[in-house]
Image 1 (cartoon, rainbow, N blue to C red):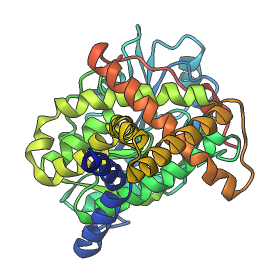
Image 2 (cartoon, helix red, strand yellow):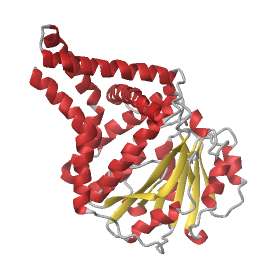
Image 3 (spheres, rainbow, N blue to C red):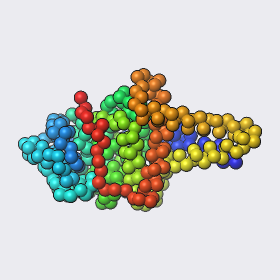
Image 4 (cartoon, rainbow, N blue to C red):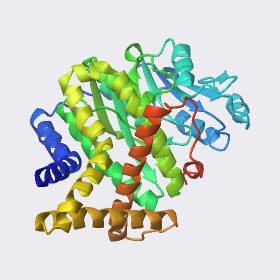
Length: 390
């Protein structure tokens, strides 16, 4: 039993610490950077799926159209998923010939909206995927496109920077988590290929984009499918998008559950990923095992308690550490739900246990939803992420 407990604890440590260090070492050895060419500007179509985005869509379009990407090489498609708040009117009244509105008369979901956009963008060499509530740096599209000068690159993912991480403990935890994920993405890209990126700033060669099932997540399926086909998915941290992070703990929890439910089933759908070891191993250690961490944690705690009660010192230490960590994380999550706002870096670090418990609880709910209920095609935007970027 002692061996089982320490094996599970070691597995958890490997998921969060060992794998990032290992893939980082592989990246240092391989250093597989794409051969970018800043003068390379292929025809590019930017897709913005939108459901009731009237409050942000005008600013989004203004932001994209002010990009330094050549005007004659850029087209923007807003696909309205049965919006009824005036979104369509805002887009139609924009007055720029580069913008086109496509409407879905009934709610069909984000993936179906993107499929319509891809079909409409017949002449585009590169498809860029975005969200209505994010803003791009002026050179973001040019920097993304530059890596496609390398024929080995099939997809490219930019960096999502979060605003408002000081507004709540939930936002602080999410901000630190994204920095951690960015480091892993950079290492994976250098080692050969990353697996997925931020759904609001990634691009792919049009001819390589797979047919994504309506109830799956495009930002997981598209990059993974391209990586499984042998092309590199490149990390382009210089291509920056900004988005305001959610501040409400309940809102963020529901978003995590929905994302995990979409992704969990999607990874079984992409059987080709598992047949290519370089992709399958990354997927297994980076995502699949991480989702199973709450089960490993609870099983190890359950196994440690009985021998600890009979005087096993090692198991007593393990039980106290695991139980104490769970208690502190749950307490921090509760404080975050009540609106706790850490003011300093030490305070933000104290939010990490709460974020850990929240994410792993969401993993349990997301996996159960995926297995027993499936995932939905339609989506709702998080209200607190739509409150302006100024």
